Amino acid sequence: MDFQEIEQFVTEVRNRVNQYLSSGSNEISQEQLAKQAGISGGALSSFRAGNYQGNNENVAKKLMPVLDAIKSRETAALTVKEPEIIETAIMREMWFGLQYASDRNDVIVIYGAPGIGKTITLEKYVKNNPTALFVTASPNIRSGRDIMEELLEAMNKRAEGRNKALEKSIISSLKHSNRMIIIDEAHFLRLDGLETLRRIYDATKCPLVLVGNPKIMEAITEKNKTVTGQFFSRAVRIALDTKVPMDDVKGIVLQNGVNLTDECLQELYKVANMIGALRIMTKLFLFAWTIANKKNQPISLEDILTARKIIISV
Image (cartoon, rainbow, N blue to C red; front, side, top):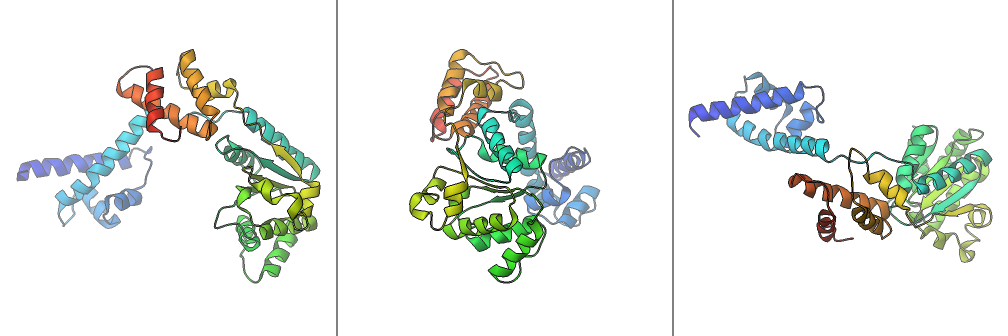
C-alpha cells in the first residue's frame, strides 16, 4: 500500500474501534480488545486518539481481524440465536428432588445420563435460591479437603489450617442455617469426599444434594456402605428418565420464529435420545441453522443430516 492507502486503512480501523467501544453494546472492553490484538492498552488508547508514535499500520493490522471476528459473532448471534432455557421434563423432576431436600433437610442423590440438562437445572435453581452453596466436583476437586476448600470459598471464607480446622469452620458457619449444599458432577467424588460431606450433613442437617452421572451409584453401594452408610441407608435416590419427550425437543428448537417439518423434528428427536441427549441435539440444531442461513433458506432435513455428519459424536 502507498502512503495514502495506509492512512486511509488506519483511519478506517480507528473509526471502527472508536465506534465499537463507544456503542455501549460492546461485548468486550478496551483492555480486552487490546489483549486480543496483542498490543498494550496504552498503545490502543494512543491509536484511538490519533497520537500513537509507533507504527500505526501494524496496530491497525492487528486490530482488523479482531474487529472482523467480533462482527462475525454479532451477525451470527442475530441470525442463529441460542435457544432460551425451557422447563423440560428432566428439570421438573430435578426441581421436585431439590425442593424435597430443602423442605425436609434431607440427603438426595440425583443421577442421569450426560447432556440431559442437569447442570442447567442446578444453575437455575441456585439463581433462584442464592443462599445455596454450589460446588462442581471434577478430577481435581474430589477429595474431602478439596470439597471443604470449595465450600469455604463459596461462603467467602479463607481455607486455612488442617482438615479438622476447615471442617470445624464449615460446621460452625452452617449449623442451624438450613443452607443447601449442592455438589454437581458428584460422580467424581472420592469416598473420603463423600464421607466428609456425610459428617458435615450429620453436624449441620443442611440439605445435601449430590448430582451426577450413574457412575455415582458405584460409590453408594452395598460394598461401600461401611464408608458411605449415611448415603446408602438414608439418601433419597432419583434416577432421571433417560427418554427425552418430543415436547422438550419442540420447546427448544421452535423458538425465534423457527419452523421445522415433522421429518426435521423426528431427526432431532432421534438425536436427543442418543448419547449426549439435549446438549448434542441443541448443538446439531444450531449447526444446521447456520448451514441453512448461509444458503439463505429455511432449515431442511438435508441441513440437519449434513450437520450430523460433521458433528462426529452423533
